[in-house]
Amino acid sequence: MITFLGSLDDRDAMRAVGVVGGEAVSLWHGSTDLQSVDAILLPGGFSYGDHLRCGALARFSPIMGAVAEFAAAGGPVLGICNGFQILCEADLLPGVLTPNHGQRFICRDVELIVEQGSPWIGNRAVGTTITVPVKHGDGAWFHPEDGLDELEENGQVLLRYAEDVNGATRRVACVTNAAGNVCGLMPHPEHAVDPILGSIDGQLLVGRLINS
Amino acid sequence: MRVTVLVRPKTGIRDPQGEAIGRSLGGLGYPVSAVSAGSIFDLEIDTDDPKEAERLGAEMAARVLSNDLIEGFEVSVG
Image (tube, rainbow over all chains, first blue to last red; front, side, top):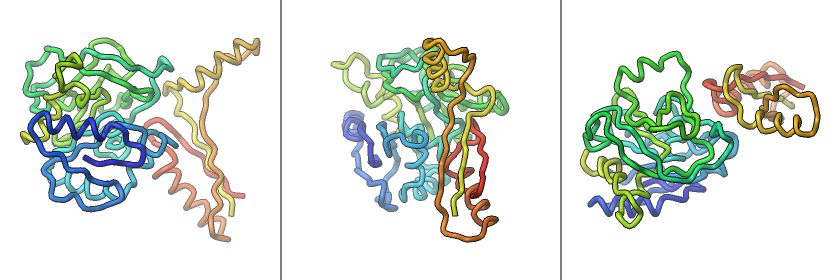
């Protein structure tokens, strides 16, 4: 679990890893040492104050070189919210996150449709839904029309918003890289791991990190 | 040497910032039908060679200051 300057969901993410039975290791963005972890989680927040573009400065943090090597070697990497933005800016995931079309910060549970039978979603059946909260102002995933069909055919779109939440291209909520080992989404699975908060569907995504 | 990088949204890319500004200007009674909002970066680059300054400015614009999926940029020296 990497803490960047301005990360704010790192502790929730570490707790969520514990809830699903894993051992969370805190990594610092300024280091290049991944401490031999088995999986990497980039948490939500507002790294570098969201200056320039969300994630655009954090992608050059010293640790990101090691993350890119880890990802290239097939290691599982999950980016949540700001972590998703960082992975897109780092070209480890396709597309880019842009301001919500409705010009509002959105903070609520959303319904997500499973588009692929993927281990990232606990192999849930295609067409079923899970519920995970979002909280973002810049969550509209954008991808040009060029290459979008290939992305879908490759099975890289894992989750789609059941309704238009933020203006995302084709309502895409969660994508992977071509190899499938790097995954990013704007909704916050780490906030949906305890029944007291309404949904435990987030355990599927966080659980993937310890079951890979 | 001063290099200015102008970054603007690509045509056809949704620009909520420009839309919000446009609506406010329209609300003030100005006959504005569209606003596109970008960014200006003035860079003081440590070189006396205008060509090198322009090359570095373009490199930084492409690598850091803009995202080519959604933005274009222009570089000017001096």
